[in-house]
Image (spheres, rainbow over the protein chains, first blue to last red):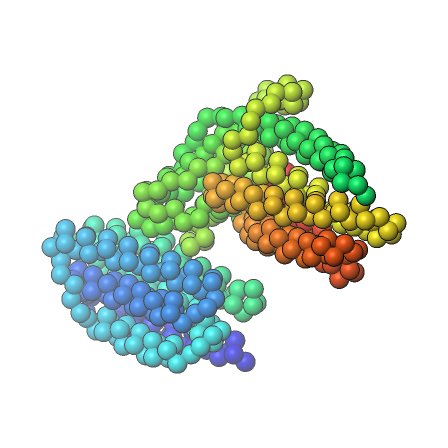
Length: 180
Length: 273
């Protein structure tokens, strides 16, 4: 029953994030400053949620995963900040970044109320949905809309990292479900 | 039994243990030294291993250099090696000890995969065993100390149990006295064995099978504590001058079985890698 619940939560989170991505396709294409703002928001969301995971989980595999997310997204955030500085771009908020932050705040609230394996499973489900949504947003919106070649290239290089995180989160979810 | 007879029995045991322990270890320590081959480098950059397939002669060394901005691992698909996290700018080396194809990946990023193909060196002849066995040099590394010390532990404790069992059957106090001294020696020497094992583990890093080494290191550490407890128990029995109780003998038997299992794990790590 819990597995179905986690699955539904993951699917609904994923669907919500997808809607954000698709809605923004109808809106005006984001500027380079807004793209940087979206990437920074996505990085910060995963760092915050994974930092919460470190304080709540007792599962070593979840701890290891959360540490990796914090480390990778911190490094990614730094490289984005360095690139933005080099290009003279200042991060700007957009509807997409605001919606991402709102979704993340709701998810944080939910995660704070959970404990033990329920927390671990929800965290893994969120990480899958989140990374899938960010990959979709990057490939369908951010990369095509990036007007600067260096920014476009940096986003393209980040895609395999996000894909790796997605696969690792899927492995984590499988191990949590099998109880190993 | 008079005191000098006890001493003679102990001397016989000690000589036997020394002969059994030291000779085969010298053979093992000399013959497992790999032939140093050419060094190969795999660059980790932009979420890729480059080259993604590397063929190397067994005995050769591969170095993975992390030139990415993220930490990565070099982890065998079959769990036979794991570098642990290699920080950006860091590197990790491994000597390929066997022929065959093995896939590896990065643990935090499972989409990063590559293959290592170990080939038997062309014209490579096995090291003549007679040349290696006759040459002796003092041990200097944990790979030499640990197997030497472990032979004393492995011999002393089971023989102490055997001596107690035989002494109980034939009601010979001299055999119980011998057993007490052997338990004492095992309790003294085993912490050194465990320390040498930890030294080996820490110096080898992740170049050891992760699951096996975890069980082996903690079982060994527990055994060294357990032997001290059993020695204290055996000393109380020795002071009373009686035969050890069935409870003590059962505990000692469990310790011996754990020791046999521990030995099998050590063997697997050394010879099946």
